[in-house]
Image (spheres, rainbow, N blue to C red):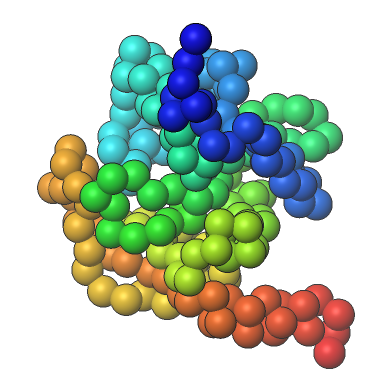
Length: 196
């Protein structure tokens, strides 16, 4: 029998929905597409490099374990229309990370559809549910696509950063914003959408 100290303090698995995506915690059924994504050198070059299935498997279990033990991990993103796994989006704060991050990584066949920008739902989740005061995005200096996503989400470049081992050798820039900055940006986006 497990003691109460061994039980996850997060028994309810959160799920979010956007216009086109369902965001839910990592599941074993995500592994085939997760492994494909992480084996693709172009997709994985900014997120630690291409991985064989055995390493991708451990990374998937690490994400699931973060959900179980801390209640903070990236969501698996599935297309609402098809149920197809398209990537991972959401809050992430491993030990030694430079701050509370909302990140994204998408399978190559999901690129160019604006799915990463739907991470806005995860920013609301990070600020409103997790109670974070700020959110960062760790982005490689040559990852222009992710920089554009960060800009659309209202983040600003804060300067050079450093990830913990084993990712410490790659250069990164920290992008981010505070809760108040996100609220102002969210209002501007709502005004633009309504034509105000």
